[in-house]
Length: 222
Picture 1 (cartoon, rainbow, N blue to C red):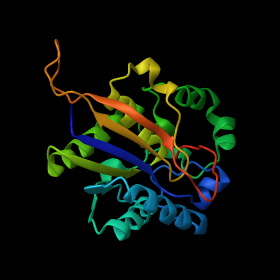
Picture 2 (picture 1 turned 180 degrees about the vertical axis):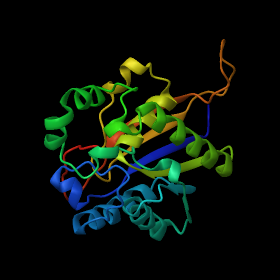
Picture 3 (picture 1 turned 30 degrees about the horizontal axis):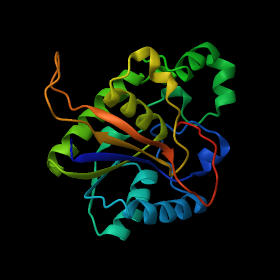
Picture 4 (picture 1 turned 30 degrees about the vertical axis):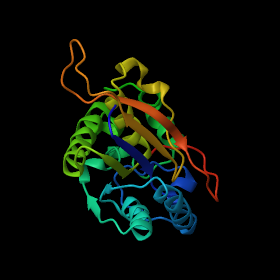
């Protein structure tokens, strides 16, 4: 069996999360609830024995990652490849506002259509490509064993999970997003050769949208 696992951890709450606004790559900080969530969740994640932390370079993820760094003494590597979806003209708008102008496009995007450019910018395939690259680099730096904590965003984590699990595109919408400061865990499967293998590491989903939080938050991507 493999000896690596990846913990995907979504950042804490922000004022835009609370207002239902699509943040995308807008650099919004954690609010007071988000800071408390990060500190609380960090204590739980520290018990998993992480060996490396890599984070999106946006402030809300950096601050969340730093809470875990304080608990573990681990450094935080930053990688812009782990940023949230660039949602173009949708960024800063509520989902109701987006629905009023781009209703059909938003519905397709929410259903998991991998080729819809969010707000005219990135598709889910674009996000999957850059997150896979960032995660592969972080795994290579960590070595053959250990637990990598990836601190990222709701939409980016959702597509990274689908990509790494090898789900067919039409099933990507079957995965729910993560609540603020919740996490999902991928465990490395057997490293024995598989017939027809493309050489990629195989993963299984051990936990999804797990966590015990002080402030319950609805799942809203962005």
